[in-house]
Length: 196
Image (cartoon, rainbow, N blue to C red; front, side, top):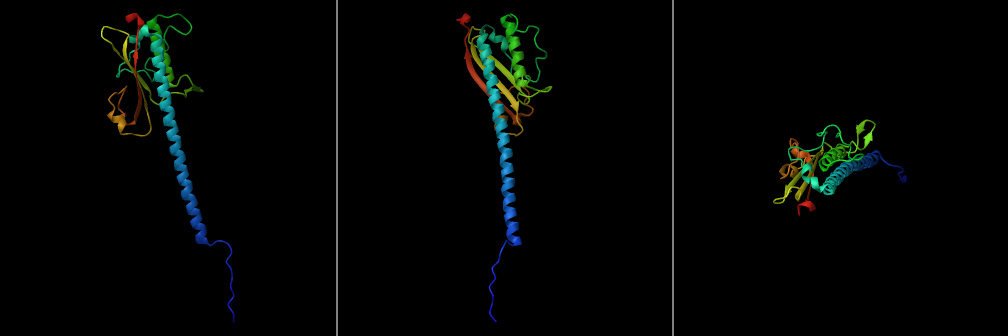
């Protein structure tokens, strides 16, 4: 009797199970990668927005430098989360205001940016930082009021804790969730020509 050779066609059950397992591991890894990329993109957007708002504050102070000291918001008294309340009585965009009134209006307007009230999705603010706070500290030069070192700190909260946030030397606002706080610190110098 002669032995017949048969050739195998198709896949065995073990081979199919191994292929499915490899595919599922790759799929779960890809999903984790997409989730991490989305979180990183959101963090980057928050940091960019905080930097833009900080620069907006500096630009407004430089535009109204004669009232630079009126913009001051101490580290324990930030703007953000509707700290300033309703809009000021004088709308400085449509009427003439004093330098101090313009400073009050600018602070309120920047708070609207922080809180996201400039971009609405229905009735909800949609364009701001998460639990924002902005502090403005002017350290006047000797004998000056509106000329000196200007430090603008913009803080917000993230969903992930970090070790370096807890060791920050400048804390703007409530530091209860210090490990989750992110911040941008902008240092510059303002010069009031009237004081020279």
